Image 1 (cartoon, rainbow, N blue to C red):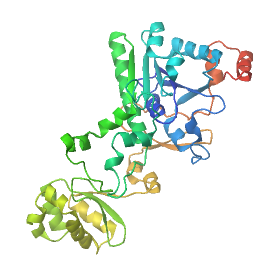
Image 2 (image 1 turned 180 degrees about the vertical axis):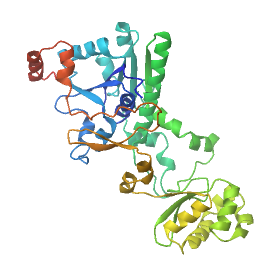
Image 3 (image 1 turned 90 degrees about the vertical axis):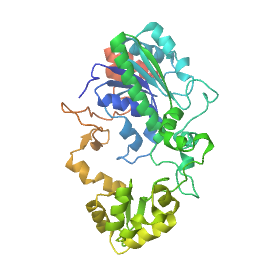
Image 4 (image 1 turned 90 degrees about the horizontal axis):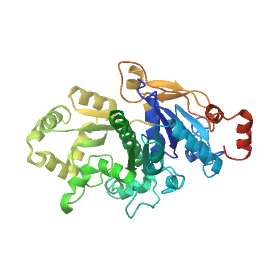
Length: 393
């Protein structure tokens, strides 16, 4: 399961979007050389110290990579980087500040003139042109610009998503576009420039609420953990104070729900609740009926009855409960990877292949592979020492 084992990625990356994209490529066997600032590295290394002193974001997005420290503002470092790209790279990925890569001579135009088959993937907040091109972009800001925050949260309080979904969206589109570009090159020999925008990536994910609000119509209301337009679909308290998440999708399920859970089969034909639109409009009234019906049972009992009735339901798990989730254990989805702080668990990449296993190598320490990479380029140990003393690496 390493179809990219002969592909080399050189990446000037930080934070989440680009590192998440290149980690997917590393999972498939690509050699990913991560360029980091000497002494500091990817600033995501300093986000927190939750994984035995290492940063949670960094451990998540950087396994199976090589770390090469270069001060890319130094002339000698630029020579090293350019030689590395021209001699070894199939793909260059970068999510530096707008214009920074071009100033370093790393634009697709500059690199393809020297290496026509090169693939260059630029990841930015707003894209390489347009009035927002130079605007700073962080995940929360893109969630806001893409309209996600406006339809998420409670009626009183708009909210962001907990995970960095704008970064993740951009990272996944970068990943899939790079795979497509590699296939294109395999067929034609042509390189490619890929321009991935966080705003465009997350707005693609927002297409349902966009179409719901088509031509000036009202957008989906903010409804907390409940579905904005389907009801009942969301969290409901049980008699023991715990929460059960459930979802009804059609009239057949509504009839069963009235018979098996509410124990009021006559509600299935009650005009107040005939059809999803009416149920959604009568949320307060219907919610009271559901809460009353669930009040005599524990959350576990409610979930059991929902399961027996064939109605979708779920637990609202804590992080600790996800770590211990029985489904992951039954499917043997956890592995361990090395880090500078010892071995830590890591979830297998989603998707199971019949042949082989994905690559799940160590999370690199800062500059861990610098000497080895420069040694392959012909630098002696003495010269590498000089470069370190000069602040080049």
